[in-house]
Length: 126
Image 1 (cartoon, rainbow, N blue to C red):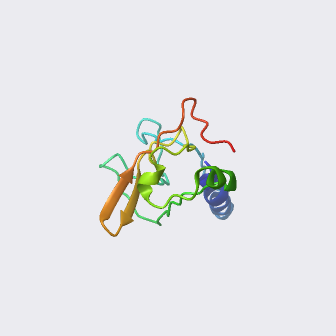
Image 2 (tube, rainbow, N blue to C red; image 1 turned 120 degrees about the vertical axis):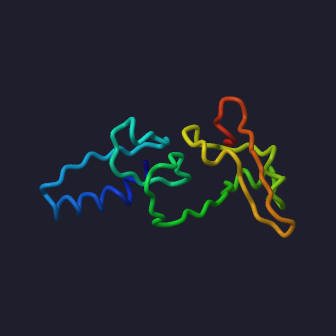
Image 3 (cartoon, rainbow, N blue to C red; image 1 turned 90 degrees about the vertical axis):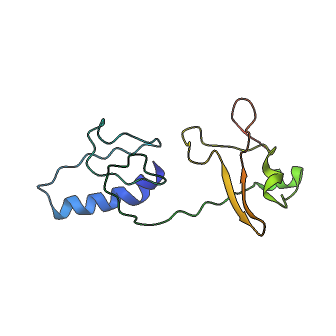
């Protein structure tokens, strides 16, 4: 939703100012929608496109980063390798299924870590 609010909405407003005969309805959601079922003509998605029958144009890339609060680092130290994050208390967005596995590329090749947030899903709160 935040991406849509920050980047898509201003572009859509400018577009509609230039072409007042066009009508648009913006659906800004943090979930994967079925475009056919929800009668959507155009979508901007961050992540994989589950429907194979749709025409797609790549317009950019997203670089993911992992961040830690100073309180977390003071309590647990700075992780030295991806596997150090396996049992870390983390906050994950409940609406996103795209980041359940964290993938890293290291000298020995690809490493996948699936963090496990604590029960209740709130994560570490220093």
